[in-house]
Length: 157
Image (cartoon, rainbow, N blue to C red; front, top):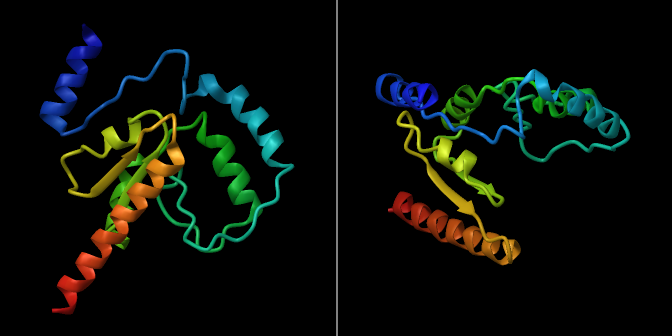
């Protein structure tokens, strides 16, 4: 009951929508630090290439223009057991790319649900088909192409 009341107060008074995650998945908290250490060991064996689009780790809430291998390893490894700057990240993305479209791929709607926040009106999509994720994602991408073409026509007039 206390958690339910806290969620109600967060939403009503602070326009914050909290999502209660499963207890067995303590993401973004110190309980997951051993997982982060093991993940780091794996990441240190992986080759990284320069990204073609800006690298935007939500651990920092900002872009890294020229990320190093260590930037990738550190941000990915600590992501599982450290707080993330979700709201700051969304604010920064929308500020830099006002027409941003958000697509969550996976069987859950955690991030999609967090985008229901009241502080931004963004276009968002969720690919939730567990049987045929590829064709569902292709359909979302096609829908985005149609939206982009419509927007380009509106701006051309």
